[in-house]
Length: 363
Ligand code: NDP
Ligand code: GDR
View (tube, rainbow, N blue to C red):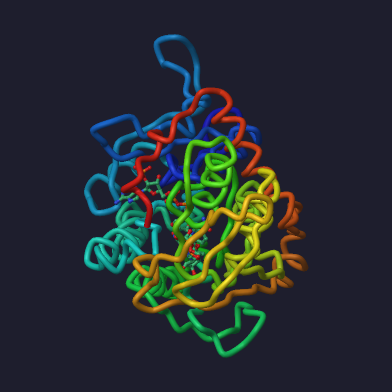
């Protein structure tokens, strides 16, 4: 622990959706937080700018460091310099569709990245001191034979992303068993919110609903409307991550809402919130969402968004997290969708432009 009994956390992926929520949570709990960010040619700290205090202007418990999951020496130095009590490994190439286009890079960052961090802990002889959290995922289950999925459900990954995360899951378990590390996996089902990346389906839909309602966009193109996911709120899930590392014993936990909804249902709720009632006509590739009021087609299916191998449906059972961690998600599906649409409508009303996420950035 650092000064005044304060705990120190190192968060990789701090500029991402979850990293920003987690940094906020840990700062509120009195932690000193070190975040790892990547060098980029333009600003990439939009989600955490409000947490940043210029070190020239005063004391801060939040510090940023350059780093990359593909750079082992950098990670070793960061662990050594920051001397964390807790490491949250959230950094990853996290887009499933993109992983089909960049499989080798995804494996490097998402599979070998966690290994590099675990090795850093060993090399620095910090096994006794550090607790390690690995951002594992419901994508590990693929098209699981069992519903709902629990910690005991067999893994059957369906993308280069999920295969890389499978390695990360097991190397975390292995370092726990082999070296006695306090290393845990959170097997998190999809979690979203107003700061969700714009190319994941939920945010793509809520941005489009807001933009179409404001007359700034004509139509939304989507892929598989029948895919089903267990969608929760990121704010609730980072609380679960923290609770996992507060346990005396390390372990692996599912975090999920227990509810599943289709992409189509998500779009209906989102468009309705923006004042646009969707009706579906046709099937398969022809399928389209027609606005009941105007008869205009607002959603079309574009096969380019179909995945080479799809995960059809996910639904988690977080009974272990409930019983051991006392964790429950607080946000219901409809409230989540409404919060996201409201935030996107407010952003547009406040002068945001569609150029904030260019059209070619949709996966
Ligand atoms: P995001 O895509 O929003 O954030 C990913 C973060 O990782 C960003 O900060 C990104 O930096 C960083 N990053 C990517 N590649 C590297 C690299 N090579 N080196 C260093 N940093 C890198 O993801 P989420 O916040 O949604 O998810 C957090 C973690 O949880 C990820 O590991 C994801 O796979 C996993 N997960 C997410 C779920 C979800 O529903 N959100 C569910 C289950 C697991 P930059 O900002 O520069 O791109
Ligand atoms: P997912 O999230 O793959 O579950 O991974 P995503 O929102 O990308 O896809 C969810 C489902 O929606 C279908 N879909 C579309 N997806 C996108 N992105 N764009 C579309 O136009 C579209 N149309 C339909 C997909 O086929 C899929 O079935 C997320 C990420 O956060 C991972 O990092 C994390 O591990 C898992 O959630 C749990």
